[in-house]
Length: 98
Image (cartoon, rainbow, N blue to C red):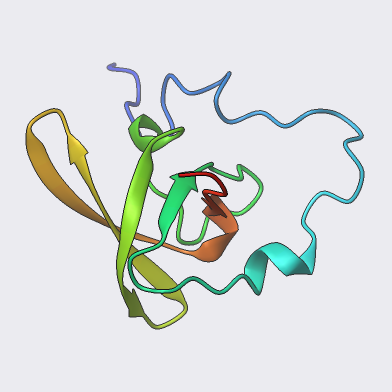
């Protein structure tokens, strides 16, 4: 029987949180607002599965292009190919310096 190669396979180190980090999911992460054209870092919060991008995009930086419901559409380049990801604000962090 073959092993499963699901969405979160080979992501044990990426998808772990620090033990006793404090409050695990502050409400301010959900309530973040971004403007069109903002640069954001994709940092996956493993305890929230909804609106989570694929682990290959963890640590990448993209630009907000649109809003879709509660989520944002982030465009970035993966190699030479332009991609658009639909990500909830729990997994995004605003880039402060440019």
